[in-house]
Image (cartoon, rainbow, N blue to C red):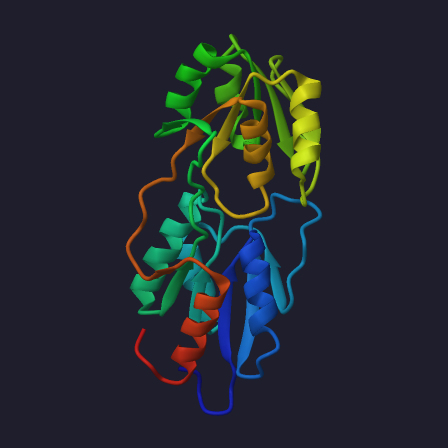
Length: 255
């Protein structure tokens, strides 16, 4: 707990819609000083309320040093469900410091009647399967996937990203767009590109669900990459639960 009269310095590992919403809920509480950390991969990010830092920490050792120096009293990991490395570092840093922490992670998408999902464990499994379902693939993967896509010359990929990607492999095109997306807009994009199959990570949330609804309407198969196994520690699935957990901690309750 912070010394009497001082606000609790709370770090949100962000980059997601949920992280911004959480910062918005907590930044107006005089008992809390909110600091949001962004990885810095997006040049024009949505800036949340409160303090902001941008860039990596230098692994778990660097994060431990930063948390000590900044006198952080509580950490909420609200990073993307597939941002595994920072979550591992955060868990280790909090364990070493005895720092209370919380993982805020939106629920997975679930298939519904009319969906044609093929669920796979990872990107390698997805790329091995794609040619069976089509050669024109729409995806929303990040920059890190480009070398792997280049190794699948049987397919052509259209990626939607929030920042331009360059250079691109010969079999990859990119379209830059920011949410909110719509079902009508995604249906038109899939038809214009001639998409035969979607390649999607199971990120969950409302921001990217429109492409799945468009695929359902068009009867397109979706190769869905499962999330990595959950890490240990307390988890919540909504901003409201995270707010409740932080306010309970401020009242001196046990996590």
